Image 1: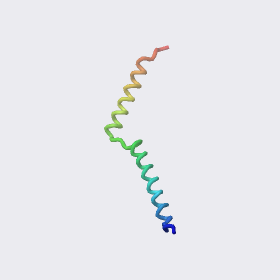
Image 2: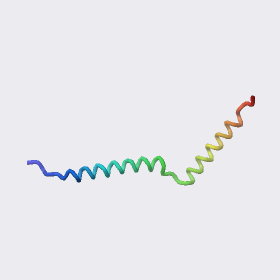
Image 3: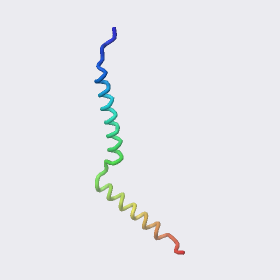
Image 4: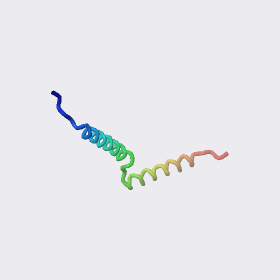
Length: 58
């Protein structure tokens, strides 16, 4: 005879796993320190300045 299972337990476990994967993705996308964000902002500004300096005047 088959073993009796609690379907609510499996449903809740699946929900927990989905939340965990979503949290991991968000941590990878948004989980950066302030120093890393400032460094990226400074690099982007420097790149923009370099591009603007190389533009030709019309």
